[in-house]
Image (cartoon, rainbow, N blue to C red):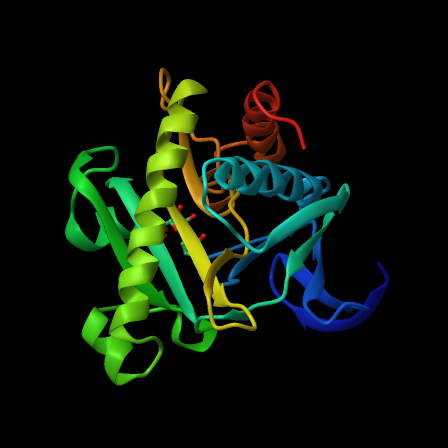
Length: 239
Ligand code: C5P
């Protein structure tokens, strides 16, 4: 497979065409950003860690019957994925109060929620990714009601599989963000990445944060935290 032209550059990844129209080439960058790009740093090794962790998690989900755009990891910081049109929504699942939920609603971080909840945010940097109701999504024609129902169902399925899986590794899956896209047939497919950049992972015994909050909140070494996640996954899975 040949790497072609740069299609898109995001904050954490570059996307290139390939000689196959339905496949794109993703390169994970060593860049860390937070607060909608206000805080930035280059962290050597971060691209490799997120590429490996995402590859392992998409492989695990596939084994459990949840398909995604992931095809295969091809180098330390690159992978091939199916080309999809990304739906401009960030789908967030929360099991415990944390982050913007705690800030907005005044609920202490770490409090278990009565049940997992799903939230949607508009993927729009200029607007700062505002939270959306299902009515907002419908009137702005970002997705149909049926599509929103599919996103919710798939997000909760991912949550069931990953919560249980991380529990076995001694990690609490506090919350996470997913993105979905449509393939050439119009089918909705899980896309983007699942990594410590997009999830909150807390050690079950110590509550140590093993995710991007380490960078957001200046809590220590991001690479140590991400290596800890990869090491625990590596003991269970191989790609
Ligand atoms: O900041 P907030 O509490 O809303 O984040 C919820 C979850 O979604 C966290 O796991 C965070 O890492 C993830 N997230 C993300 N990308 C964003 C916003 C949130 O991956 N743009």
